[in-house]
Amino acid sequence: MKLQSRILGANRIFGRRAPVGSTDVDVADIPFTNMQSLAAELQQSAQQGQFEYPRNWVLVAKTAAALLVVLSVAHAGLVLMQMARENGNELATLLNWTTLGVVLSVAVSAVVAGFLANLFPTLHITPEGLGISELTGKRYIPWKQISVLRVMELRSQGRYVVLVPFTGSTKPATPAPMLRWLPTLLGASGWGGRGVMLTSDIKDFDRLLQLIVSYMVSATGQNPNLVPFEAYVDEDAVMPIAQLLLDPETEIVRIASNPVSKVELYGISSETTDPPISWKSVLLKQVPIALVPALLLVTDVLMRHNERPFVWQHALWTLMMIGFGIAELPFVAMLVRAVGDLMVGSGQFNRTVRAYLELQTPRAILLMVGAGLLGIGLPAIFTQGLWFAGIVLTTLLTVRYVQRVYYMPVTHTLLAALGTFIFQFSLLALYFGVR
Image (cartoon, rainbow, N blue to C red):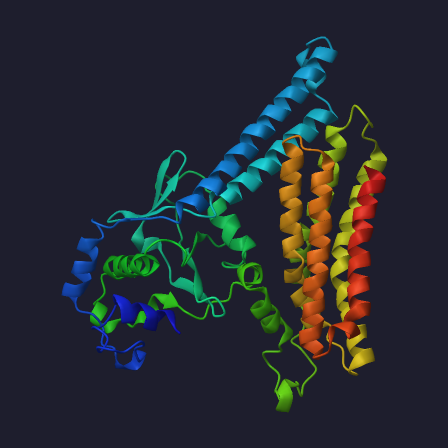
């Protein structure tokens, strides 16, 4: 069911009440609101202007974020104090590789903590703009700077993911990197876009969207009677990583299909060519995924400088790990194409390149969490366990993708599964060998 129909059928952003007894509303039959109803929405926002996620969710996320920051700083302090004590308490002795490793570990933990702290934001609807609660107070986004809302429906779950994009500076105009990084990580804003991510799990979700759209209409100064709902809400947005994390089966079906192909009986595509690949764009997206294990290796080696000194060979192996990480994308794509050529006579390469970019993301997220745990002083076995879990998860997702793209049973995907698993595990083995 469309978001517009759902909201209009309940409390209405635009239009009149739904007929008695109806459960859905035909969008074409809904007239636009008048200025009086819009004014009523804005006036009521003063009475219901704060929207929160379930308190348990917020408490767990923010507690985990705070612990990551505090424990990483405490661990860094203990390491540096012990190192200074062993070298005669001279500050000059702290200028070494171990200190660099400690700084990197704190930075990684802070980034992971930032994502956790911003997963479940508390939003405020005010005449000044959309407010976001932060540790140092509230940050406001003026209504005139908010662009068209991007909405993705998770059909199998009856939930929604929404990006509230904006341009310009916030109030206060202090840096807010998570408003850029979180939408980018979830594939909601593309490269460089900023916005506030929220889901329909937030309390009074329908009401929140009504008020946001109402203020957006008011900020434009246009006559709301003449502006359609679609001018403010894009209900067909695609957020690939968010859907892969929240509804993986639906996302796998989407990436396994060819949007430009003709489909015949039984859902088999009659065209085997996908749109061409822009390798520059693809590899730019693969590089951050390849950098995560390399960052983990460098941080681990530098922090253990006293046990095993950092040498130039470590830098060489790190570059090699990055190269292997970049090569993973075309390797798996060629492997999946070979499976298709053997089993059904037609392999998919271009489509798999785009798909595998997404399928690796959960592993990269687990690796970043593992690097954060390393930064707070936990034994490396926890990080390695998360890395291995990411390998298994990526392999399973790839198997499901191969099943969907070629319409074959799981037993026929053995070659793709083994090849994907072995290539990923080789990076983990390289990490063990170098550290």
